Length: 181
Ligand SMILES: Nc1ncnc2c1ncn2[C@@H]1O[C@H](COP(=O)(O)OP(=O)(O)O)[C@@H](O)[C@H]1O
Image 1 (cartoon, rainbow, N blue to C red):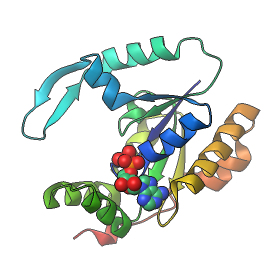
Image 2: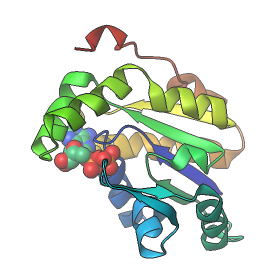
Image 3: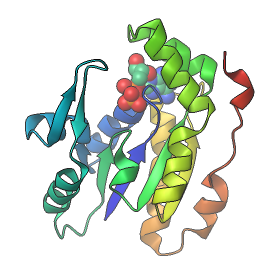
């Protein structure tokens, strides 16, 4: 099974993924995979990013996840373009701004990402693209606590009846549209 862990940069995907890996889950770090295996069509010099070839990425992820009965976590802000089931990490603008500042992002890059979070960009894309979407708040919480929630969701999915966890983590809980500068 493939479960995408998506969200605006800075919401804590990699911190959560690393802990999930320690807990025994197989994690695919999409950004590294795209770079290491040249799964991109061009380099966007202006934004200093690689333009992923999503068809090739999807094929490669399916190969790597294979017919593994276990859970494969895809860590990426593009995971919702690959997985049918995604967990979207959310962070309140003030927290996100501070996390990205500590990561030495430029002012412009911070505000671009904070604005995307305020506009629910990744959540909306996930709901449009994926069969099942869960939403998790990471604001003011340790990554370890967020991982507990992620594992609760995964358990619900694997049980065959996720109705209880879906009630708890269904999308649409946040409205930060009023916090755009
Ligand atoms: N739950 C959290 N609470 C506070 N800070 C966090 C949390 N999760 C991650 N961080 C911090 O926020 C920054 C971005 O986390 P990271 O896991 O790299 O996010 P992403 O992979 O979504 O870009 C890092 O400095 C990390 O230490």
